[in-house]
Image 1 (tube, rainbow, N blue to C red):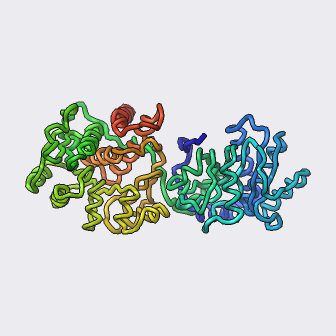
Image 2: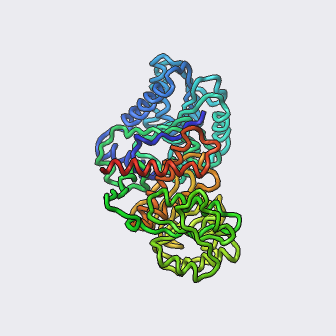
Image 3: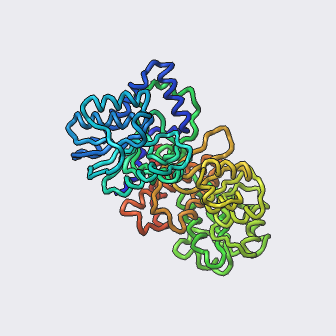
Length: 503
């Protein structure tokens, strides 16, 4: 059974692998904590969680590499054996290659009379502990290492990964040839940013953190590489409402969307904005369906537009724009896109708006771009695989090329704005949201916050986090069959819960 990452008790600071290795060095050299002591703490922390997560184990197999990750595995093996479990240690790589603290832990294992077996047959354990490759991996896993990982993944037993699943790149979340698919991963000293984006969530499963008791002052030596965000952290930005407030206090959003056949995208974006607290929503859409698009939601003001002047008139009364859901790639969509960007209003650009932007590149400071990986590849002129190879780099390149705030959607949605602030990574959300219309809902939510006079960075982070949290609430009864519209009542509930906490 796959387990989604559990993030409620995790730190919000994320780091690159080299930064965590530097923390380790500082703890050893400047705070006089022996490396062997840190390894003992790591193995002990992993064993404690192992017993909590899998209390009925009888037999485990610990697969160890030749580095410090393997040393942690030897500690887990020793503690499990001393507690009465049947334990086998399988060594990947030649045992004579072990050195330093890892060698000390291997010798502690053999001193108890236990053998170190070469990796061949996993047998029939209740759990496999992955202590093969650590965070320093920079080339694809091949040969017997790849064969071992594939054999572990095929086994019926769940896998518990030490520090990071073997084969997962700690900085980018990409799979280096092949990678362990763990049910749970315990990470030490600092959380690695690649665990939460790209393929990281698939490989890590439930994520647990152990700082190993290093002094808090150690972390002052490095700026965090990325900050994890969620609705629990961002809901505090919701503005209290005065009892005498009126609709004009909460902004007017213009949504320009919906060519022939795409009225649903326009409706979802507009209704999501209305559910996100904006005072007024006007939807400018194709005349063919303008007369019926607000049936069942008469609160939306709908205008069928076919001329530039009509859009110009609407932008004069709005505070912010959403441009692109269902806009299409025909003459009507082109007219809407060009007319909208003649305005100086802040704007969220999504979907076909991004495809028009890729065709006619320009820079602006006051927009929020919301590409998924396919749209990101068109903005960058490469392919989707290249975007997913390093999502952090892709988001930064889009921001540098087009300006504003960039939201790179996907598992572990990233937000960057080119400032000195680190990128943000939303760790909420679920696979049920991989369905048509969820992106339209997101653009409407962000546009609503933008129209309510939040900064663009605030609107982007609040919108992404609220959208993800609503998706998680909506998936409470199952992810399969989740519809974009199912998020709308959850958006309203979450906003009102946040508002009630302010009273």
